[in-house]
Image (tube, rainbow, N blue to C red; front, side, top):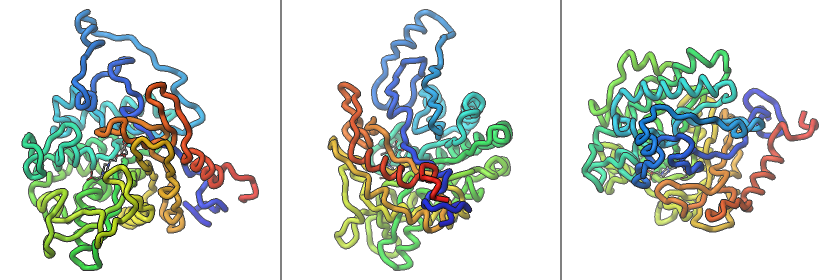
Amino acid sequence: IKVNGEFSSSPFPRSFLFGTASSSYQYEGAFLTDGKGLNNWDNFTHKPEQQDLDLMDYLGVNSYRFSISWARVLPRIQPFVTLTHYDIPQELADRYGPWLSREVQEDFEYYADICFKYFGDRVKYWATFNEPNVVVIRGYQSGIYPPSRCSSLFGNCTNGDSEKEPFIAAHNIILSHAAAVKIYRTKYQKEQEGNIGIVMNTLWLEPMSNSLGDKLAAERAQAFYLNWFLDPIIFGKYPKEMYEILGSSLPSLSKYDLEKLKNGLDFIGINYYSSFYVKDCIFSVCEPGPGNSKTEGSILRTAKRNGVLIGEPTDVDWLFVYPQGMSEIVTYIKERYNNIPMYITENGFGERDNPHTSIEDLLNDTRRVRNGADVRGYFAWSLLDNFEWNDGYTIRFGLHHVDYATLKRTKRLSANWYKQYIAKHMAGKRSSASA
Ligand code: GBH
């Protein structure tokens, strides 16, 4: 089998990364310890008591000595690092809303520069953002993530403007990404020889029927979910469906922006969990949702067709087990973006406090390799049970169970399943017979 131009008896090339994924806020549980400042999720999940900072403020000090823990740098593991996984310092969130002002671009660039400079000798895989589409949709449309902004367009609250803000926020995130990439390319990449990309949440969106209307609707839905970010970064313009539907509400890309965007990715990180059907609500009669005509192109996104669910339901309301969807989305991205390198940066399964979870169904999918797409790694979400955002600790995504009282980790069946899968398929681990 030929993969990435390499011959191998394993369907995975030697350089294929098998990993597990995590994020800082969901794992570390640090609040105001070790010199960490407040971020937007601290602010969202609890009204922080700024104990340590207050103490320092009271003292009037302007400096704080701390150390980096040598043993935290794990030498045998290839670090695949995200610069921001939903979190941003609260101070910047207050100042910029946190993505509504273009000034945030410069701050992000400054932060990224520091990370490249100090960690780039060891980190060869950088993702600028985790799921900026979710940050924007949940932060500025439905309002269920910070900064909790939405408007009557989407239902529940009135402190935002869902017609404009999501697109402004997305624009600033896209250009912040571009700024970080530009710094990496010009100052670091040649010497450090790493890769830089972005991680997107993906959904496979299957047309409800073979009608042209439903096919176009599925395409519109994808334009407003995925291509919204990837098109500008890769092609230098938003998807045509967005221009058609939004017209001048879509921020325009200046010459200067385009210059920054050029050559804006080495890889796409794909977080894939679930799939939905999409029905057209322009020519057929339906109640559009979860967005509305103006912001999502008049589509209905639903897990059911003729009363049958697209995949087995789970304890997580948006997660239906549909492994084919991963091949579908990989193929879609491969075709749209000219076979760019991809990593499955998250894929997993959440259960409500059940100690026996298997990800077998979600992983048992090698068509993405056989179809010739350039998939270079797979990261299961997640190594451990962790803080599942709005669901707190009630939803468990780990290959390992965590007893939160004692922090004791216990292997689930899925941990052993994944271990065996890796042992069998990791090319480097096989005997020389593989040549
Ligand atoms: C990922 O988020 C996160 O990166 C990770 O931190 C998290 O723990 C993990 O997955 C498990 O949830 O109804 O329009 O929102 C995924 C968040 C929320 C994205 C549900 C897809 C469904 C479409 N997902 N969303 S929508």
